[in-house]
Every structure is written in C-alpha cells, then in structure tokens.
Image (cartoon, rainbow, N blue to C red):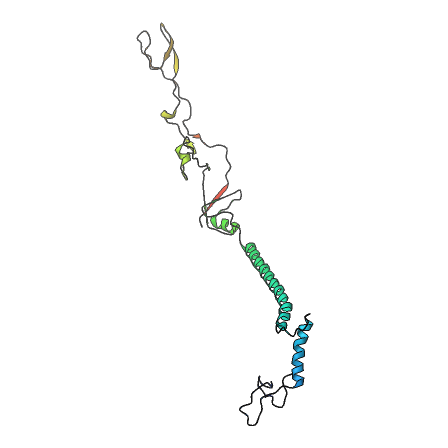
Length: 236
C-alpha cells in the first residue's frame, strides 16, 4: 500500500509528509488530485486481500464484505478477550475478598456477650491482647450463672434477667428453723414422768426445765462444689 503520488497529489494533506487528495482550487492552473493505476490497484488489493484472507469470496453485489470479514474475525476475538478480561476481574475480586477475610480478625464474642476461659487474665488489657479485639470487663465476679426462666412456676429471681441474688453463707433466723420441741425427765419426790419444758404437771406443780446449749451458731455454707474460671464481658 502507498499514499497517492500522482503529479497533482497535495503535499502534507494528511499531516507532515503525508500526501493526499485535494481539489487544488487555491492553486492557479492546478487540477484536482487524480488517481493513478498503481494507487488504485494497491487500494483494491489491500481490501480484497483482507476479505479473501478471512475466508470470504469477493461478491460484486455486496459492498459490506470488508466489514463482515472484520466482524467475523475480530468479533469472535473480542468476545474471547472480553470473557478473559471478565474472568480475570472475577479472580481479582475473589482474591481481594479472600485477602480481606484472611486479614480480618474473627470476633467470636460480640458486644454484650461473655467470654469464659480457664486461662487467667489479670487485666482487661490482657484479654484484649489475647483476643485481638474489643474492650472488656470482668463479669459474674464471685457468682454462679443461672439460666433465665420464663416458667411462671419458677421463683421471680430466676425470671428477672440480670438479677443478682443469693448468699455465700447464711445464719438461720428463728423463723427459718424447723418447728420443734424438747422434752426432759423430771424426778422430784413423788413426781416421776415426762414433762415438756415450761408446762404445768398434773399435780399443779410447774416445772421449768432448761437444756444445755449446743452448736456454734455460725453461718452455714450455701455453695455447691465449684471451680473458679475467668469470665469477661465485652463492652466495646
């Protein structure tokens, strides 16, 4: 292929050093650019070679063969290129997503939830360093966890979320003691029988009988066998 190079070709018509066609009306006694057989044949063969080279037979009645040939050849290529591009983009998106997932710390304890462990932490900062996230405070210090109940027959304390109740030790009051009495054997003159303390006997003689004290009066242990674990609540 070459650019038109006839005697009337216009210099620099298509840029520096690129001849082209022109009506040359601005040049005295100069005809418009005319074709040469060499240029016309070169143009014809360039186009024909593309059409035939891509598998089509030249058809005088079809002026759209060059376009068809290009679409047939490069259209398929573009579809494939687009598919490859889309596939690469999908791979990159998946890779980026996986990178984010791998870099993200898995927060297995959400705000307001508790973290139980047999590992002992002295400070909340030590918990945050161990877990890799969150702000923490000790929870249930010295207390046992009891499941919340929605059973109307259960005690009201079990049916109140967050309720704190119970005692580690407790001393029974008189009202809490089992109802009971004491008996004593009385031997006085002709009186011989079992008389309940503070009662009147059958002969009209009142007997005040005292019994010796027993027991230490200390509070008793209310706790079941237990083991102390660390319990931390996430607050942020």
